[in-house]
Amino acid sequence: MRNAPVRTPWTPPRPRIIVIIILLLLVASAFDALATLKIISRGADEWNPLMRFALSIGPWYFFLVKMAFTVIGSLILAYYARVKRWAWWGLCLVAAVYFLLVLLHLFLLFCIPIPAASFTC
Image 1 (cartoon, rainbow, N blue to C red):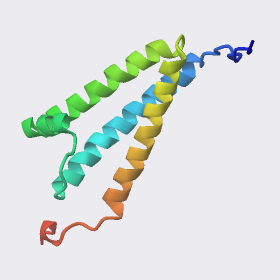
Image 2 (spheres, rainbow, N blue to C red; image 1 turned 90 degrees about the vertical axis):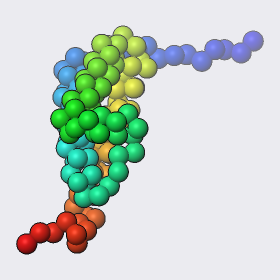
Image 3 (cartoon, rainbow, N blue to C red; image 1 turned 180 degrees about the vertical axis):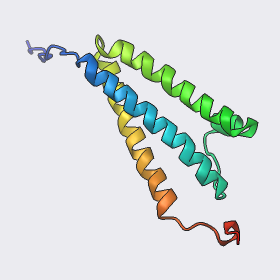
Image 4 (cartoon, rainbow, N blue to C red; image 1 turned 180 degrees about the horizontal axis):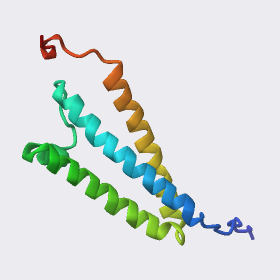
């Protein structure tokens, strides 16, 4: 008979670590929203259909919807991160994706030239 693999016991992260990750996610989400608005003002399009709809209502609505989704999702993952391994890994995955998104926005903001039509004298 084969031996079943031994699972290592779950050691939950410290609450302080979860709070730090949540705060970083909120900052990254706010940067994402503001950078998206700036990049769209340069002529880009929003790819997310839900956020495109929010943007059609107005920039403040776009920002509030973006932050609301981030806060709700982060709080759900943070609530379960102390007891469920999947929630902890989900929180880490969301943080990693936001880190990559911040890098993409920095690239788009500083490495892509502004179209000549947007310059005013």
